[in-house]
Length: 147
Image 1 (spheres, rainbow, N blue to C red):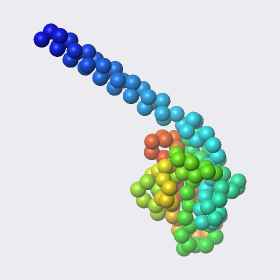
Image 2: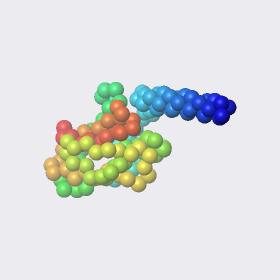
Image 3: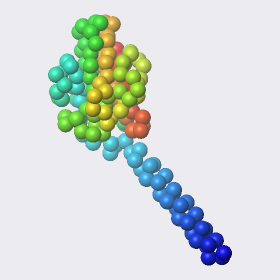
Image 4: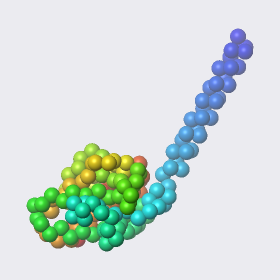
């Protein structure tokens, strides 16, 4: 009986040690600077889905990236994603839950998606800012604002 108690105690200690290691590794995965270590682009039907240099996202503050786009046709649905030049896994951001973006209303993004592109229909022509908030890499968000 004493041997069985000792074995159970050792297993319990082992399980607790493993749980602490998992928690520690999850905390190190939230480093923002290491996650977006490559250029990201606004890519959509208006760019023929190409990665064009003038649509490269710029970091405005730590973990937050944005780019301006001129949408000239009110009422037209513009479709786009935020992705690197190779559509790489982890760097191919489309919608997570809902694809329709509304002005000043952030939507969750999924940066491992292949097909889930965002859509946005401007009410007025002009310049818009598209922002990728990656400050919490487990829950990135995309936002469109009027410039």
